[in-house]
Image (cartoon, rainbow, N blue to C red; front, top):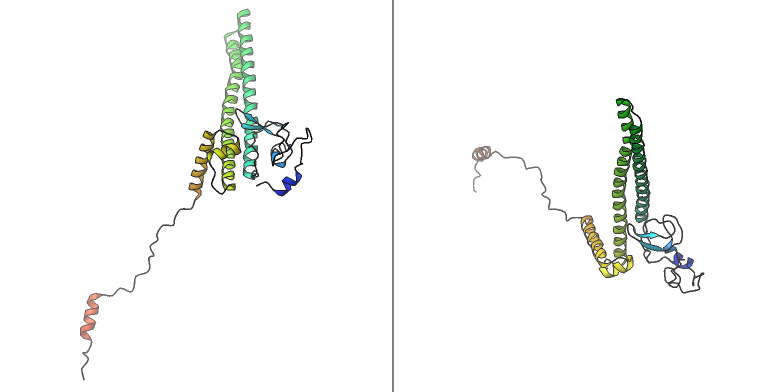
Length: 244
């Protein structure tokens, strides 16, 4: 549930349009956000979220990945995963931009080299050297593109884990009983995705549940072994007890 401190910090009405605010501090009239639940964990700005094709939801201020705010406060683990996803997102963009720049540079370099070959007649070793130099940007573009794909996989993993933790948090906040429709409303996703998240939460809870201890057999040291033949000889050698 929303903490009392967060509710105390939330104004009663919207300062932009004087409209009413909901429990989390969002103005339904103009869309402004004032409650601490809307504070972005990445840029620390009070900002609403907006839908995104690659991030599901992103911050309107910094464009980083966000989990839609709810009465249940976001956990530190979710914040760490969102920060990791944001870092991988920036790396993907940087490597893709570098790959495109290297590809364009390689194309221009190769075109200039071919024009020079048509105008002049350099020595064979000079042609080979020029072609090798022209191929270098293409190689750099390939490695940059491959690196961007690796960071894209890390980004997707961190983002999916953040949403899984968010779903688990909301399920726990509702006593472990939360329908796919209710989860879809809280996370602002469709019911199909909410059902998948609930299934993943159930599997995660099952894997984390301690298993029943197996039956154990206690092995003790055996008693002193008795030689049966020696026992019979001892019995025979013992004097008979006379009856009175």
